[in-house]
Length: 186
Image 1 (cartoon, helix red, strand yellow):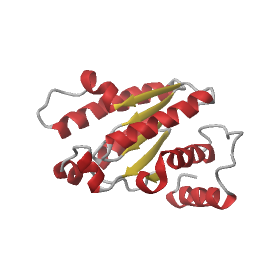
Image 2 (cartoon, one colour; image 1 turned 90 degrees about the vertical axis):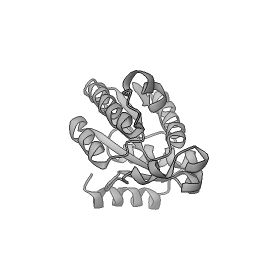
Image 3 (spheres, helix red, strand yellow; image 1 turned 90 degrees about the horizontal axis):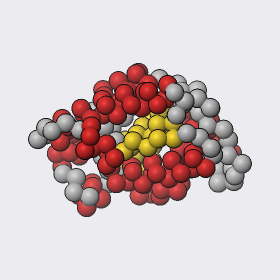
């Protein structure tokens, strides 16, 4: 299998990291080469020393994106769990990497406040225009979202189909396929 980058974004780093680890585990079980690049793992060595957290995040994102590009090019799956507040920056990563799948994780403001995310950070986040997958972790839960992401990756041809495909009905799979067609991804 060829490499690709799964970019998990949204204002909630905590939920994004949990979901990314679940995807990583499943892909590893399927025998794929996977590298998880999350904000916790790369913050100390890639983020700048700016006092402005948004500047640091955007600068770190460029580094993470470049590493993801190298991994993808070398047939490794790069899972980037990164808040990535700017749409234009995510679009640059998509263009640089090529084999790129964006997952947007929605999160209610109340839950963000519990995680220590300020209104300023919430307002600075630009929702993606055309993510391949939208997850609402509060309504769907991590397991359902992970399965939706994996099914999307299968439909796009990035990963082989699972032997255990009971969780999704034909109707649900058709909805995913239709969304990807409507967005122009297939």
